[in-house]
Length: 272
Figure 1: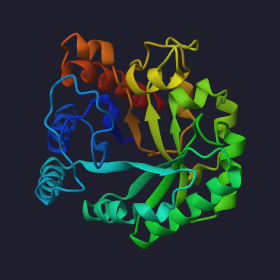
Figure 2 (figure 1 turned 180 degrees about the vertical axis):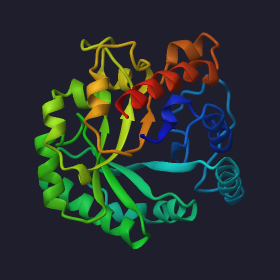
Figure 3 (figure 1 turned 90 degrees about the vertical axis):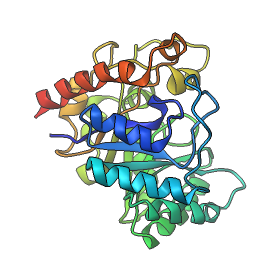
Figure 4 (figure 1 turned 180 degrees about the horizontal axis):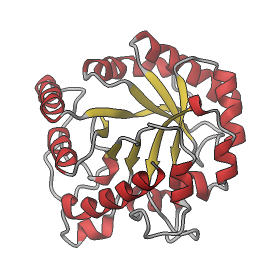
């Protein structure tokens, strides 16, 4: 059975303690967080917050995790960028370790494969010094849209704490298949982000759809049952399902996400 979680862009800036409590109430085992809200989109009017700057909030989050039995599945916000030294993330990694998280998510926004490999290697070493795992995400903005390129990057980085994040929408929309998924060594699948989507784009840009409008499992066209069945046993599966239109219509995060959790549970139970 796959542990089930919720990712931060699904709740549009909800403060982390409230987020943990919501995920626990919905029957999840983990949350994917950032050290600050992921965007300025704040339909529910949450107060500003920062885990970087607020020691009291970090204490509150640790207590909420302990009280609920949840854990942090991944901490996002780490990127290889042209002209930026990854060592600049050292202080953020200290916060991640302080929170008791075990994994960070990293992306590359640098199209140069050699610089991407170098940047990931530096970031993986910084993570390892703090006892952290690092998972890199397939995506359209860097050099790893496909499984073949992702495996080449992993081979180039060559760090024991490195693995992949598989986001269902990115994975399939970028042309990968279930057969491609089966070629990934099991130990390289570190974390999974789940949503549904139609095959055809619905918005002017890919990133608008990815960041703001995804679908619950079963409401789109992706082969999610086969996707889940091809994952290694026990891999974390976390819901990345932002629903901007429903939030703007006044629907709260619980009402948006409860059906998503129920649909995901049917998927993972079916796979089990």
